[in-house]
Image (tube, rainbow, N blue to C red; front, side, top):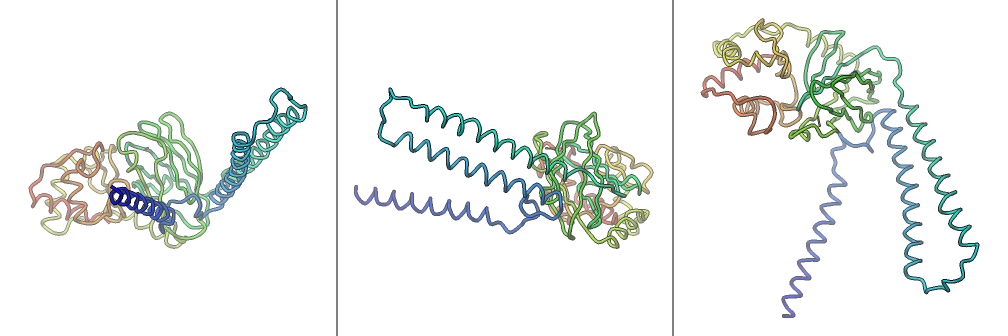
Length: 336
Ligand code: CUA
């Protein structure tokens, strides 16, 4: 009997230790690409600064309130009939005046942050259309239409126009900027800038359906030269298929009705706009809005059964034999 309870205690201790280690590990995760506290822009730094102020003030207030509560619960009972005026004064000062002062100070800090976040002048505009469950990314000045990736030049504020094609989504890049909603009937505006080159992960922050969690994107901040090269690359016409397999893949793209939902500039039949523009699909880093890395195997898996990888997304399965699947993949991989 004694042995059993000792074993139970040991298991409980081990479980507690494991959970502490796990929580600690989660808190210390080294990938800071989507962290409010690892900022890479002035607006994100302002937000993080406000977050620390709120944490400190609210933490101190909570400790004081809990201390007073403990005092009230555990202190020996004083005579209850004698309600001294000191008690009333204590309630007025600590229950009304001090909280009012604290709340006004926090309001001032919040308004100050809000003012610091107002958009500056910018020479580049990106238009984002939210879809269930991916991001359409347009550069209107350059006639570029892509998906789930925003290239921006470092140290330049970029105007971001946001609208939704269906339900409400929310555009959030924690390391760079606060959240802004995408509404179906109104264009909202925010802005982004990055202090240093890097890949910053963004995420839809408004529940929008079954694959809300896999509605991610990357902001890729690069030097101005690299950004100009990327723009020039995007404006290149798509290469014509060279091999027999690539040619067959291009035919299959139309025969299998992929062109009803996807656009490929340079392929006249492919003018669909329900799914991502595939003109430069091969140069994107991920598939399925941040779901899986973009490589040959994953692309084949995605084409053959997207519902297995991301249930509830809008793309139906295709019924191709292995040769056809290989040919279609060969063609799509030429679209750099
Ligand atoms: Cu889109 Cu959540």
